[in-house]
Each structure stands twice: as structure tokens, then as C-alpha cells.
Image (cartoon, rainbow, N blue to C red; front, top):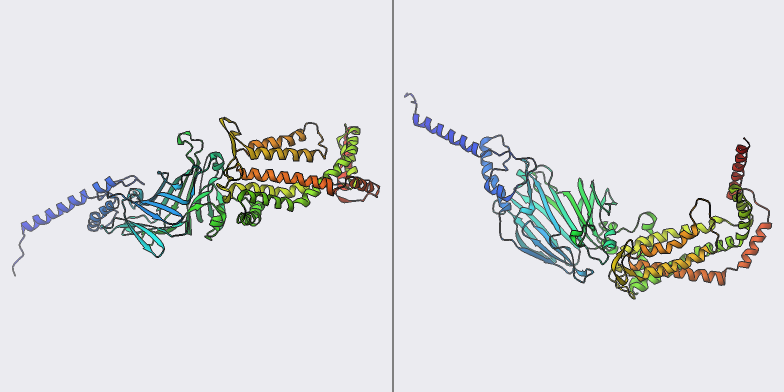
Length: 608
């Protein structure tokens, strides 16, 4: 058998191959990059191995590195185009660069300048999917170039944006619009990208500056806020002034409410680690009063077991109208701030249905007047009891003044004698306060109802061209602090009505001046002036309600005084009550005993 001889050429060949492989491995090894560095198109194209994953097998690593550069295709420049989707309610424009919505127009509405109402336009909004890679870098879809395609499925119109189709690594975004809805389906999915993506951390980032769409910037800004539903059906909001941010879990939807219009991101499954932020822009003079708030939200994007992106969202772009939102059965109506607790219940189950019903066959201004009449008539028994209580106090006023003069230096004795008089006459001094307390929930409920009643928007009545904003009868060339640069007539009428109502009610009862205490009568008369300043920039529909409400209350009190209540009979009844034997027990008796005990203790301390 012939011995195998040493072949120097074969040896040299192995050495050369080893040297070449070593040199290639050295040239293609991953470069060290800072954590969370962003991958730019230039970096990926110039260095195809910059984002290579760490693989133990050197040969396998070499193979992967030669294909890993295909991520550059996602950001490779291609012709940029705008795709348009349209329905009866919405007009959408989608940019192939970044796959972003660059225009959302509500076809049925106009802003306060009679211009098309856009929720997204002129670069006020940014959508971006942040994709962290396994080596620490981050891909941003705003840098991607997508190839768009339009299609239809029944009544649905779909634009599909695909990036990187040639390389086998694809990222796809779908926008789906239906003919008669304010909802848009938004889907994100990938193919072949998962092997480069971290296990978690993919996020959809949405930032938007809220356009000013109403005449009163200050008033609109008060009701422009970010809210979210989480932990089942709990709804919370960020602060309307300054800056505010939160990180929340189990979130169903996030709403960017621009007073009467909303942009809402909806997830079919609860989202965790959701970051929300709001910033007030109304004081930023450089923005020329074009925007009210700056909103931002960051939500996780779901990935499959192989780390491929797979997430479906919905967007609502439409009016902040309770009934419209309620029709989608997604709990979106809870984004309308109807008030908390009992005030919200009154608005939801009484005033909202009533006003909607009246608005079906009456002009909006007349509907407000009719609803006001119905509310005041429903509260008329309370008004009656309050007025009767005032009459009784007026009858007893001379005797109360005698007691005050007799015991002017002894507050305890004065209070004892006064309570004894009330008890003997059968008069409860608190009976006048109870009717007022009963009316408070109605007062506050309507105070929160009118500013968010969408049906008031751009509805005119008399001199008011928009019942959801102020009614200016005189524009001033200067600004009055806390008042504004205009004069609204409905607040003036409401303040006059409140003044006469206050005069009628305070005229029936004494306003004792306690040492060191403010003059309550002066405060009562200051209220109309305060209301005048407070409501000058508020919705004229609310001022109209208060004007009619106080006017009706004055009429009711005059009717009660002149045709229902007989002062002589009330006086006779009080005198009759004085003759009756005094009942033991009761609140007045216990209070009087407590005051007598306090007086005894005071005398005992004085003797010491």
C-alpha cells in the first residue's frame, strides 16, 4: 500500500482559506452600538451588518450577516405618494412615507371660520411604531418607505402599505374604512422580521396637537383633555392645565378630546404599560392660538411567539356626541364629561334624553326654554316650601330683633331665646335651606350638561349665532381681565334676573351681622356681578338657561305670593302655635338644653 505523501499545495490552500475566512469574519463582526440607538436609512444601507444578532456558530453568523442587511430595504427610498380613502363621514389621506395618516377631515362639519374641520392636517400629528432590535438599536416606521395598494371588500375600502416586500422581510399596515361610520380599522403585521426583534418593547406612539375649532379658545380649552378607560369601565382624565402624564394598565381606549370632537385609539384587548401625556398650549404665543393641547400616548404592539408583529386597533374620528359614541357599544360615551356621581346620572338619564327629544321637533333655542320651563315646574313644590319658610321668618322678624336688642351682649342667651321662639311658633329655620339643597344637584348637573351638549354647536338663537359659544353683541378693542374682549348679552340678562331674584328672597328674611363675619347681604348682591364675569366667555346656551330659569322662578314666586300664600293666615297659624303646649324632645329642645348647659358652664368659670 502506497503511503500518503504530504501535499504542500493542499496545505497552502487550507491556510489561505483559513486566512480568508478569518479576515471575512473580522470585517463582518458586529460593531458596538449604544443601547436604544436608532437605526437610520444611511447606517443600514452603508453597513449591512450593523444590526446582526449574536450567533454562537460562526458560519451561521456569517450567513445571517449577509441577509441581515435586507432590513435596509424597509427604509430604502422609493417614490412617495398620498393615498386617499373616503366615506360619507370621513376623508383620509395616508402618506406612503412612514405609513402615516396625514389628513383626517370630518365631512359633515366646519370649524368656527366655516372652513373644513380637520382633526389631522398640516403635520399636527405623528404616528410611529418603535421596533427595538436584539442588538439594542431601534427601527422607526416613520423612516420606512411603503408601497401602497388600494382594494375593496364589499363596502369596505382598504389601503395596504407594504415595506420591504422584495427582501422577504415585510412590514404591512392596513387602513380600513367603512361607508357610514366614524371608525377606522388599523392593522399592523410583519413577516420575516421577528428574528431580529426583541421579545418585547414594540410600541405604537401617537402624538397630536389639538386644533382650535371654536370661537372661544379659552372656553374650548377647558373641555379639551386626554381621557382613558381602564380597569373595566373606570374613566380618568389628565389635568386640563399645565402638563400631566401617567402610566396606566388594563386600558381599553385613549381619547384625545378636542371639546366637541374626539380622536380615540381603541384596543380589542386591554393594554398594559400605556403612557399618556397632556400639555396645555393655549399660553404659547408662538402658536398663534392655532392649538389648544399637545397630546401623546405610547401603547404596546402585540407580537406572536416568533416575535412577528400582529396587532389590530381601531380609531374613532368624529363628534364628541353621547348618542353617537354610545351607538358603537365600546364604552366611548364615557369620554363625554357629563359630571360625576349624581350629577352624571341626572344628565345621562333625565336631561340628555329630554333635550334630545325636544330637539327632534323644536329649534335648539326653543328646546332650551321648554326644558327650562319643565325643570322649574318640576321644582315648583320646592320653590313653594322655600317661599313659605321665608314668609314665616319675615313674620317673626320683629320678635327676633327684640331678642337681639335685649341680649346683644350675650350671644348664648340670644341664641337660646331665638330658638325658643322658633320652637314655640312651629317654625324650622332650616326649612328654607333644605329646598335650596335639593335644587343643588339639578343646578350643577345642568352646569356640566350645557358645555358638552353637542347639539348646541353652531345652532343659532336670536342674536347668538352659536349656542355652544359666547354671544358677542359688542367686540372690544381691548381685553378686560377676567372678563374678555367682548360683551355677551345673555350673561347680562341672566345677572339682572339673578339680582331681582336675590332681592326678592333676601328681602323676606333677616341677614344678621355677626361680629367678625362678612356681610351676607353684600355677598348675595355680589353674586350677580360675579356671574356676569364668569359667564361672559361661556356657552350662550347655558346663560340662556339661567336667564329663563331665574325669570320663571321670579314669576312663580309672584304667583305664590299673590295668589297662593295668604300672609295673614300664616301669621294667625304662628300665633296659634305659640298658644299650644310646648312639646318635649326633638332637635330644637335638645339644642336648647345643650345651650343652657353651655351657659351654666360659662357662668361657673366666671365665678372662679
